[in-house]
Every structure is written in C-alpha cells, then in structure tokens.
Image (tube, rainbow, N blue to C red):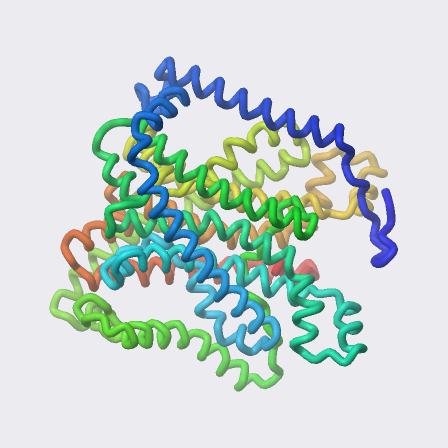
Length: 538
C-alpha cells in the first residue's frame, strides 16, 4: 500500500504482469466453458426443441447468409454513428452549460428526466411517421446517448479539484480558461465513461427505429423480416451480430479511456439529473419548478410547429388532450389505454423488483464469492450488449409467449447496470470501517449487514433509478413482440390502424409512468438517506 503525495490518500499497488496474465487466462477459460456447454445443449436440443441452436450451427448459418449482412450492418452502423456524434455533442454542450450555470440545470430538469425516462420503443413509431429516411434512426440513437453523457460531463466538471482551479485563477485565468485547463481535463475520464455506455445505447436506438418501420436495410429490418420463418439459427446470428457491434463500440471507448486517462475500470454514471443550487427565495424556487414542468410541453409544441407536420399525424399537447377527453370517442380511447396500462404496470413492477433483487444478490456475491461472479460475467455482458429487439425473439423461442418471457426480458435488461452500480458502492466502503466489526469477531455476512450495505445505500438507490426506465422498456418490447398485451401491443395495433392519437397517448403515458416511478424513488431515497445523514448519490 502506497500513499499519494498530492492527496495523502492510500493507493493500491498496480497488479503485476503475472496476475494480469492469469486474470486474462481465467476469462478465456470461462468463455470456452460457456461455448462448450452451449454447443452440447444446442446439439442435444435440450431447450425448446432446438430454440437454442449450437454455436457451430449459428456460425454455419452466418456463413450461408453472409451476402445479406454487409448492407444491413452498414445501415445500422451509419445511423448509430451519426446519432452517437450528434447526441454526444449536444450532451457535452448541455453538461458544460448546466455545470457553469446551475439555474439552467433547474430549468431543464423536466426535459432531462423525460429523456432519461423515455422508453425508446414508445416514440419509435412517432419518429417513423414524422420523419423520413435515416432521420428516425439517427434521432433515436442520439436520444439514447444524451442523458448518460450529459450527466457524466456535469459530474466530471463539478468534481474538479479546487486546487487546479486556484492555479488557473492565480495566472489570471477567467471562467472559460478554468473550464479549458482545469475542469474539462478533470472531467475527461467521466466523459469517456459516459461515451462507453452511450455507444451501445446508440446501436440499440438505431435498431429500435429500424424495428419500428421505414427503410429497406438495417439489422432491425432484417430481424423483423426473419421472425416468422421459424429459423432460430438465423435469429441468433442476427442477434449476435448486433451484440458484436454494440460490444465493439463499448470496447473501443474502454480502450480509448485506458489510453488517454489510464482508467480501465468501469465508472458508474449517475442516474439522476445534475443537481443545482437551491435559492432561498421560495417564490423564485416555485417559479423554477413550474418552468421545469412546463418546458417539456413547450418544447414539444415548438418542435411540431417548426417541423410543420400535418395535424393529423403530429399531436400537440392540446390536440392530445382533446383526443383523450373531449372527442366523441374519448371514453373508448381512455378505456383502451387504461386496460393496457393495467396489464403493463404489474409486470413492470414485478420485473423491476426481480431484476433489482438479482442484481443485489450478485453484488453481495461479488464480495463473498468473487470467483463465481467472474465466471458468470460473460453471460451478463452478452445480455448487457445485446439489443433488446434482438434478445426478445430469442427468448420467445425458448420460453414461449406467456408472462414468463416478459419477466425474463425485464430482469435481463435491468440487473446488469444495477449490479455494476451496487457492486461499485460495496467496493468503495473504506477498509477501516470494516475493521471494527472484524475486531469483534464478525464474519463476512455481518460485515455486509452492519457496515457495507448501510454505507452503500446511495448506490443502491442510484441502481434503482437506473432500473426504472429499462424495466418499462423491456416490458413494452416483450408485449409488442411476444405476448400481444399491454401498452406495447396497443402501440403496435395503433400503428396498424393509423390511430395517431393513440400512438401519441401511449408514448406520453409511458414517459409519465417512468417519471412517476423515478420521482417516487427519489422521494424515498431522500427520506431514507436524510435520516442517516447521508447525501444522495449524484
């Protein structure tokens, strides 16, 4: 153990080359074991009579279909790349603005929460009917990148070491010089961590837009066209191709982060909008809150007005209110919407609870049984990088079209980010705090119960916030592709019937549900942590 001369903090010695080599060999061994088991299960057709084909069969089918893939992959990568670039440029600019002028963060809070809570599948049909060509794919890819990179930028800038800022000031530097020479450099590791997470999100956004319709090429288009053919090996090939693209995008920025900053470990990006300075004037505070709530609706109206989309397709807030409450068929529309919501909500809550419980168990296991968790990580990484629309048909093949497939999909898409966040919180508990119960003879379980878990509560709540929008997204995609129930199915039916009012209603309701869950978590978090004298994780 060494001590940093600048900060006085203790730092662990870097692992030697032998230890790193053994870690890489263990990872390779885990992957080989996984593929060997998969091959045996696939050959023996132990899962749903061949719904899980052997890797050799998938590779053989990939070779057979090799002429189909270049055009589809190129279309997806082009849209994801353009959306990634646009979304992250906007995110970094917004993050800088929010960090330097906190009042703007308060004003934009409603927009930021809505973007974070937005299930992409809910707006995919709207984008397809409103825009043309590659635009829906690029927009959805950009939306998938914005929040995570914006939050990472704000976190990095606001956590800049005050001594670096003082040095720039001492040499006569102003606000922009401080940003350039101190704050932005300090924020670089955090921004790169955000880009690492945003890259797979961009791929998912592009495929979801392809899945919603429009265009001849793209992996989402190819997937939809292959669903009814009863060819599991082709579906697995498409799914693994999408996973490989997302995984390579993640790996690219992991390598870039390691080269530029020396940071090779994952950094948890906060799941809450940037904090802002509170104002003592209650009237001013109330005005900011009202403006924050009104701004998303104003932006919604302004965008539709600027685009000049026909009123029959583009529903403004007033037009949507008329559709749901004043039109002759409003009662039937309300009944249909509420019936679908009653099917979606219980599955969302159940799936989110199971996903968080599984993540919590894995996080505890990473402390108690690290070797077992390392062996499980290859499977976890695949579920993290595989786009939902590619994962869902594969699970339908194995599990059928009942409620179980909804729960599996929801758990699979919520547990990994929650697990990473929880595990990071547990790993950051100071060793000195664990020495006290250990001195009294407490074992690992009691150390977790009395020290580690209470100390990592902010990260547990951050993990819960991360799970909220992903749970609803997983349920709606499963409903659309598998079960034919709930909001996902209603969205799909409304596209077929050209019921644009219902499409907008489902999109808005899904966002409101996510925002409501999100705010409930924040309220509970603040009450619990305030009683313990802890600050919420940002």
